[in-house]
Structures are given as structure tokens and as C-alpha cells.
Image (cartoon, rainbow, N blue to C red; front, side, top):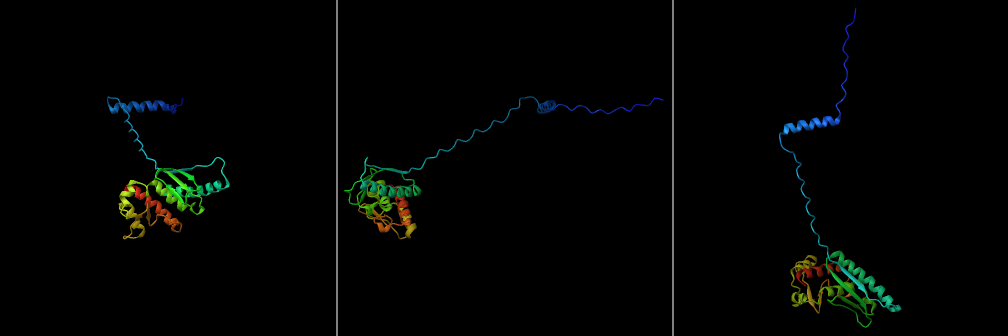
Length: 214
């Protein structure tokens, strides 16, 4: 007797992946109906906001081409004082000024002009950060500008921002007195007024005076 053969189940070869993709795409197109599908346009990136760089104080010193021992010693002391003062101004304010420094032995102490020049005399006791801070304030307008005359000419500073700041420091009754091209408190008019706190407040008050319109 012949035996009935049981048909063998054979595994169909897998449909290639690209054929599957093609079939899926065709099915999607049929479901979507006529028309051309387009990708949604991407939004253009928002333009970056322009940033205005904060101003800063820079300085340079005039040097003799072949300095004497006295000149070199003065240059070293003045450089240390100016570097410390300029760093404090730049850390605590956005004031801008290009300052030119000269060593002139005939100057009794030191002086600063709104045109951006500072002169140091031969007296070493004035080659300090306190003096440099004080003279930088003169180059910015303290005692040397029309705004100073308008806001400080009465003997009391009348600008709102600097007045509010000194009251924040010293209480609601505090005021900034003015006279002889200087202000107090925190004007750093004498060496015994210097401390890190007083120096910081000096810079902050000068910056507030500028905002007031000095």
C-alpha cells in the first residue's frame, strides 16, 4: 500500500525590509487620499538679542625711555595703586574712561582732570589706592563737570540715586555733602578714610552720581 504523503509546511522567505517600507508607504498614501504630503516648515530660529558690552576703565602711564631710580620707583608704586583702583572700579561699576597717568615731581600731591589725565607728585604717601580712586573720580566728573556744578553746587548732592544710596548705607537721614570739588562721606579725601568698605561705597556712589546726570 502506498502511504499518503503529508504535505510539508515550508517557511516562506521573509519579505525584504525595503519592500515592507514600500508597502507601508503605499498604504499610507491610499488612506491619505489624493494630494502631496509636505513636511511642516520649521520655524526660523529667533535672532539672538544684541548685548551691549559694559564700559570699562583703562589706563596707561607715560614712562621715560631711560628712567632714573626715582622715576622707576615712582612708576612701580603708581602702577600698583592704579591697578588696584581700576580693578575696583571695573568690578563694581560699568563706568568707562581712558586714563593717562604721568609722574610729575613738582605736583604737591596728585590731581585728576576730566580730560582723562592724572598726575602724581613725588610724595610717596599719595601713591596709594585711595589717592588713585579719588583722582579717577575727578576724571569721571566729580568736581570737574557741569553736571557736578548743577547737582552738587548747593553744598548738598541733589541727585536722587546717589542720595538714596548713601541713605541705604548710613540711614534715612544721611546726605552727601559737597564742597571744593569733593564730596563726603565716602569721598576718600584723606588717607585715614580708606577701608575696603569705604572704597567700595566710593565707587558705587560715583557711579550713582553719573546715573543722576553728573
